[in-house]
Length: 267
Image 1: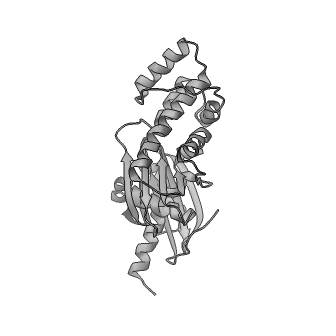
Image 2: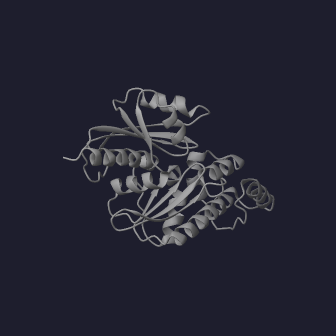
């Protein structure tokens, strides 16, 4: 693990409550000392409380779509919230201090963030209105092709040619995939076409924010080898993927809390 700038401020926890999973990161004096992950389920508060059960931190910073819900039901802890854009910017710079562009593809949204040289957010774009181009799209299509989600990227890399999938709507894409299969197209080639559709959409977002290199890839979809390969082809260079891309937002949330704590209690 590559740590970033060492900050003071004791123990603080960051929690990223997403649509598919909840990640917890615990920092002590600016250094990541523990992390955990759980499925969001239909009771995200219960999942958050279970993750936090043995965490010795009175102050928690929440991010993700469920941050306000958690902050409003925080029991005895002091909880503040931070936007996902801010959290991912901080988290990416923690793992890679020179990063200038951050890409996060999660369960139901995609974020492209351009950073200034000092790490401040310059521009960003976020797709959070439908599942197109997100992990949910890949999950849906992996199920349609009867391939386990965790091996869907490797399955797509078995393709012997690249075909175009014109629709990014999950329902229409499934219909298109079924039609292609009926015409004799192989499942790996169809899977590759689906991955290409996601990456082309993502590259357009990166182009609109105008980010510079290096590019840092976070979120659950960063585990997918086909998406990583196609993104690197598209940007024309190596993309930074941390060892645990799921926890970047949670780490950034904790760092935000430590920065605020340091501002309130300067030495």
